[in-house]
Length: 343
Image (cartoon, rainbow, N blue to C red; front, side, top):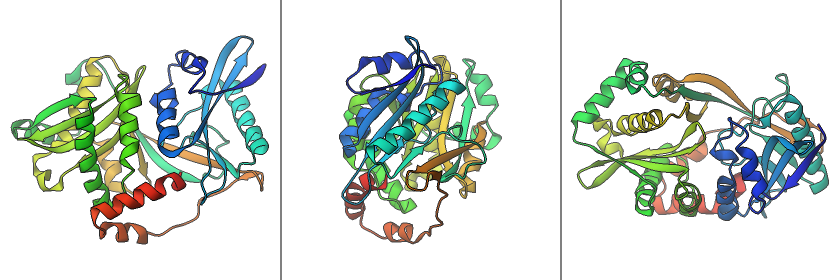
């Protein structure tokens, strides 16, 4: 390993060109995703490229975040389910070492990696989740046959229910999604992200052909919708929402199956269902019922002052109970005020 170069992934075309050399690169590594984070939350993106001679052999995206409520810190990457460090073992080690050196030089309180392979397995994780990934093939019938029987039944019921599926990267589809997003987040006791995040996501990612909104419409009403991202051979289910009043139609199942079928038909190899809290057994069962393989996803937070990775602190569920009782506009204002600080 000769060196690790620091680049601005929003200005230096070398970043995006370099990603093309790594089959495991996903939408979360892209300059477009970093631009969404930068424009929505005023984070500063940084790109680390491991070099062997003139060749790029590894990539690690980071953002520097600081608000009046929170200390300066480096994260790879906030609001990102998982961000693998790209490259072989030597490149990955060099990239982590350079990131920690940047943490020292820039006075970051900590540097966080959202890659289970960033540290030794014995290192305490800051957070731990489950990830679920479905292997795709172009034979849709074969993919459908691997689904749990209850899922197949729900999809067939939805197909008989008169729902219409729509694929779109347009602004109206994203606005329809966001209305359901606010409804669903309130039901779960979580403030919604600011609409600016989804507007930027549509403008920089979806409009560039790297994502889409898939919606189920009942008559003139969108009753379920989801946002998917894709790059190379990988598709990611990033957000999903629905109107609980229409739950009996199984619209969520139909949205998910149509997305899986779309990616299968076009030769994508994997479909990632995103992260799941370890305590959410119901969501784990749901994702496994689609034939997805389960894995552990660990986040590591290296504290510059103590020179070690810190473990998570236990928390309670009182905040969720409060949010569920708030009027929807108030919950949106809370999300607008707090998400940047929560990264």
